[in-house]
Length: 254
Ligand code: ADP
Ligand code: MG
Image (cartoon, rainbow, N blue to C red):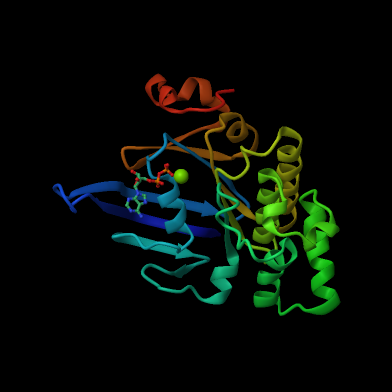
């Protein structure tokens, strides 16, 4: 089963126009993509190539100009708010952990929010599930009482990962969300994601510059360039990448 299906997705942004002439930036130019249950996809490409835009469209956070989006078999194109069961099925972790957390809510409250909304958990059951999620991402249950400002960047990123795991989603988009974690923490998080994939068929989209991560963790991979996706086998990163495409990528190259 495909958890997400994109057909002929186009997305254009208007740039400028206030003083100078307006230009149109045709970021996505006819994207077709299927993400299957239990599959892990890698998405690479230089900065500004449209990876995050594609991620937001896959999650129904943004509408394409044309094309169709299906999430969990339901056509969601153009919906302003997704039905609750679709919304819980697709979760995202952004690179910017600080920007994605309300600074006035404790880590426990941040993680509890989806549990209250989707599972109607409260009281002891809620506290126990929050503690369990904190432990899964390598934090302590005592961290539940801390505000975002008291965590390091990597710790707060783990709070965001715990929040994304909380509603037991079918799909998680990790938009440059794991490369900033230190190696040991990253290995632990990847093990956890692999376990979830085995047990619950969770699917992942890794948007990343880290080709080693793609090679180790992804079943299929794509490079975004000029608004289209080109597929490559994660195991053949060396041989399949055109040198020009490789040189456009920054960050860890194996
Ligand atoms: P990536 O994630 O690959 O770095 P993005 O999807 O963030 O790329 O952005 C692709 C291009 O679209 C960039 O040139 C960016 O400036 C532009 N862009 C992204 N979002 C918007 C927006 N909401 N309004 C205008 N331009 C945007
Ligand atoms: Mg991005």
